[in-house]
Length: 450
Image 1: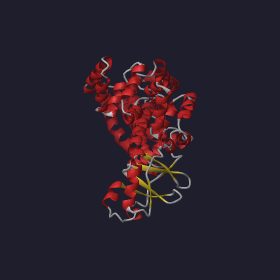
Image 2: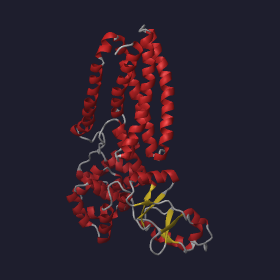
Image 3: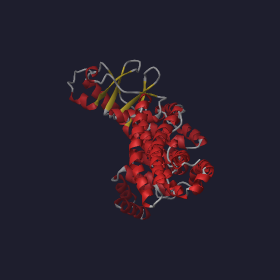
Image 4: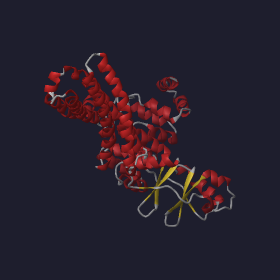
């Protein structure tokens, strides 16, 4: 609310041509608040004018925080000099992210506006695989030599700090740029001025290759509680760093994508309210069609067992209970499994333990729920045979759901698919079909029908 009031004041100042006052109000605001305030469907000319009121450094910082659509609007309506200055001063990783989203012809035009050094750097970053560590890294790091003194290292940090991504964690390299270790700014400050960097650095640095998936980089930063993750080439030469703020964006992006896939939705790139109606419908329609086709198997199963249903109609009373319980159990197991794989808690060598654990969990949950199902059958007077059928079927179907929810994401990972697609509607459909077969086969055995 405070931000909205400030922007109302700024709008009044601009309308009354009190530009100095508007500039002062903007300069006192946090960059993220300015960025969110500019994402209000402003006319292009007004959007550009706001940036002209901002100091250069603040303008670049605000631009980096804007949504891609607003960035593109600015680039389309700003002058050539303003565009050149903005993309020249952007951090390399944010510029690469922007170029990823723009049409190829626009990127080509913007690259021509960069200085030769920045153009070479931009082309290098764009040359790495999509969603790789190389694509999101920044080459703006501070590198120190092992035999520098702490005093000399601090002098170098002061000289380079303004143009670098971070100064709190510095990389230590040899003459060939091979990564030797990492050293914290705090350790340099507290060390004796004549102590060599070699003596206070961490000599076993965690690093990631340029071609590694960005999720792997996120897992390493989370696992080792890092502020900065070095990125190296095949020869262990330092080429860049990934900072924790970049990883936060990745975690949000990957989590959103997984949630959408788990709900049977193809990932939507735009924000919910910005995405077109047809786009949202198309993304959701694909999996709904797949589910309808798969659920046709359920009808086939029911038709196959129709003689049993006709002789013991009360069996149909529990079909919703059985398929709902099995599907929910499968979804729960899949959620835990996908989360475990995402954060690196689940590995292939754990497969035996995982299957045993989920089997025991399935039997425990299934037995408890089976007793409740049997009690319900008794309450509505279906008879002993049907009650025991329901109890046994619930137990086995919950076990089946647990194992399906556990193994299908692992199968997806084995064939290099996103495990998140093996959850939600897909697992529910699989368990529905298999669960009905189990139910009616048990009914045939318990009640003496074939």
